[in-house]
Image (cartoon, rainbow, N blue to C red; front, side, top):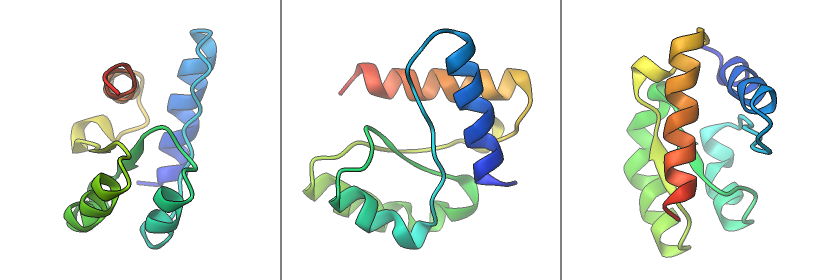
Length: 96
């Protein structure tokens, strides 16, 4: 699955709901730099890169940045799954 496609779908869902939340995709190899440069409010790790989660989470925790795994069932660009991902994102943003 394309992370950029999932990001576009969930961003469109937020825009339709009148919420100023934007989701972007980047490579896992750019992740540490994105965390370090404070380029986001929440760093999400896609299912296909979950093997890097622990490494990124350690770094994110040292930098006091939130990070979450996207469950596979929320990583499909269909309405119900996109809503599931949006709910996950909003839940993490509310709890920071």
